[in-house]
Length: 205
Image 1 (tube, rainbow, N blue to C red):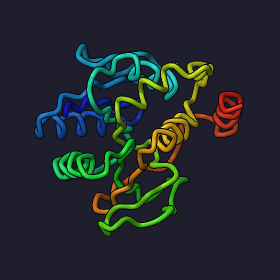
Image 2 (cartoon, rainbow, N blue to C red; image 1 turned 90 degrees about the horizontal axis):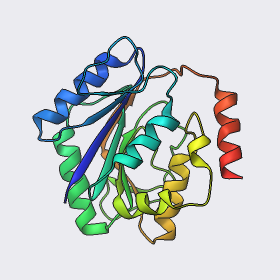
Image 3 (cartoon, rainbow, N blue to C red; image 1 turned 30 degrees about the horizontal axis):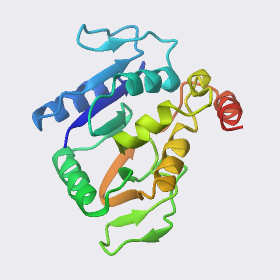
Image 4 (cartoon, helix red, strand yellow; image 1 turned 60 degrees about the vertical axis):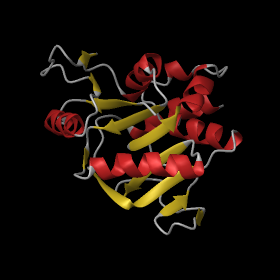
């Protein structure tokens, strides 16, 4: 099963993006870094400029995706056991055929409570995985791209995760959080929360 990896970077997070890129390279995954930091623009990264937020980065990742599973991670996280995370993602895929799988984002997340715990004690069925770090089945990406909604105009990208997770359940594929893998998510946003919320509501309506 082929996993295609994407890292989203923006000003102030470049050192973490470089670290994650190197960590994934060491376990055999060459990530595509979609970058909006105008002060660091290596030729092997896709450099969109500082005007690109999650919405534009997500749209590009969806267009570029050509694999069985899309893995996406934000540059404002820290984690060390990527090898174990990828191995557990693939194993649980073979057992549960999840649509979405994610580690446990232990701080700075809106989506905290599970719906229920699965027989494997570390696996939880959740409403939303949190798009900070997640694996997505290719079928959900193909469905997402054909939705009759103007999701590309959602500048800040809020709500994309809710749509993907809804598609997963509509396809009778669970959305899984794995508490064995705990991701640190740094706090803070470089944009106005009220504007992001408004963009999301327009898209969802």
